[in-house]
Amino acid sequence: MDVQLSADQRAFFRLALETGRLNREEDAVEEALLMWEERERTRAEILALVESADASLGHGEGRAITRETMRELAGDVKQRGRARLAAEQAASN
Image (tube, rainbow, N blue to C red):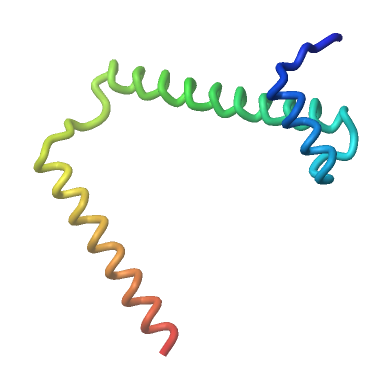
């Protein structure tokens, strides 16, 4: 495979080699492919979650989000946070 790099990419690559960030030319390609693979895996997981959420909503599952339900959620989160903090403080005493 023959890859053509832009001038900026070549400079970036040379800097990585000169500073020891990369030891071999192949390291850059391997790292780039690993990052791409991870990004695509994450993307596929997100798309699957979105499809699942859409299907749930299509079946009438879920709940309506209103200002009131958001206030209730915020209140619940605060209450749980305060309870956890109190428990942690009690355990440390």
